[in-house]
Amino acid sequence: MLIPRDYFTLQEVLADWGISESELGYVVEMGQLTLSVRVYGSFVVANRKERPGRCNADFEGVVDLERRDAMRVLRKQACSVSSFAQNGDVVTTSMGSTDWVVYRDALLVRAAEREHFEATIMEAGAPHANDYDRFLSFDLNGAHYIFTDMQARALNFLFICAVTGDPEQRGVQILGAAGSASLKLSYLFSSRKGWRDIVYSVSGRRGYYMLEPALVVTMRVGA
Image (cartoon, rainbow, N blue to C red; front, side, top):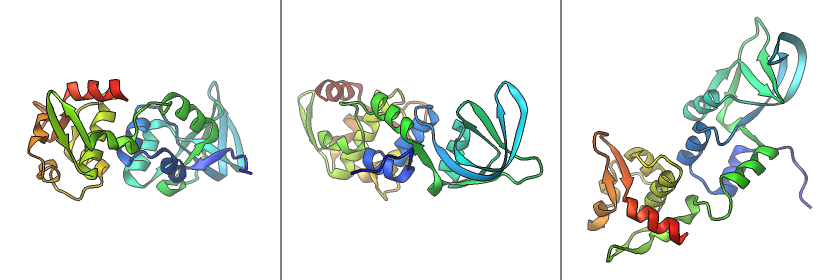
């Protein structure tokens, strides 16, 4: 029997969801997923309408990070944070105390947040990183395309970004999502001459690429 839990580590939910680091950064940046952390020590707990609040010298609990702080932790692996949220309250470090250092490996996802994310963002049929099989072999506008696993992962990443409203992506992010060590996108696709027919360079944004809109529609309808 599974033990009921109030929260999960970020790493275990990422493994269950099968989403990449780039996708994680996107959903956090867009406010679609709230990350949390467990803190303890001296903190001031205040209602958002009633400040300055009360000091709790022995506070302990799971608190939520503000969106920008969560993005900083994901980007830097660790950073100091002075303010958190918990059940409508604001939890801040006590005056004279050092800020709490939040480490990437310590990030959590509340059980309720996980349930909400899975029901609204990853509902049945929603594309995610493990759906790359659709890009291994397909037809578009009378042409047949065949790609390797890594190339298909890159195409699937662009597809996910397109259907979630952010179609233009940097080459380095695409390579990272594909798990490629190549320095350029053209190196990853060097074995496939027709790749530029479905992956376009974004005009006016050097180093950015997007998927052919017709391919997005085709894959979306066939999903």
